[in-house]
View 1 (spheres, one colour):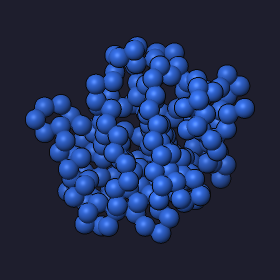
View 2 (spheres, helix red, strand yellow):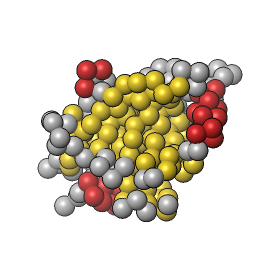
View 3 (cartoon, helix red, strand yellow):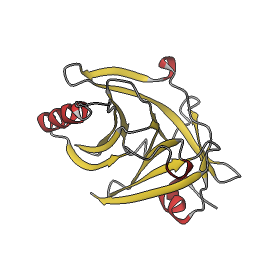
Length: 196
């Protein structure tokens, strides 16, 4: 039986076959605050209760009270959005990638920052990536992993790219990039593991 505790291994083995429910961007339920206006960085996430359905799909439902196990990281046009990952929120999931960059930073003292970085088309497509890297350098965030998603939509029937990271006992972060079709089934995947 697949588990949130082994989610990346279960995705990699094919035991988890798709993605189901995801919370829509809801300002009322989300943590939203600007971290740095000049760098275009803000928190935009909400607590979630991630589960594996009986049909072996990942479901990310909004948390009910204190019953949560992670953060769902939302996208915002023109920004890098951030969600915290730590001992209380060991899983971060983010969808709606179609060319954006995903990055993980070690912010120190057991705190990690997962970023969904908008990449508009044109000559300045990496401007927000550069701004968050500048900010990270100024505030001592150590980069752990960068994952591009450009060029994946339309390949193998991919309609959406979803990225998720799981913190394992503050010693390892496992990350999966999923290409899902219009039925939410995983049509391609990549996985990474970073020892801390």
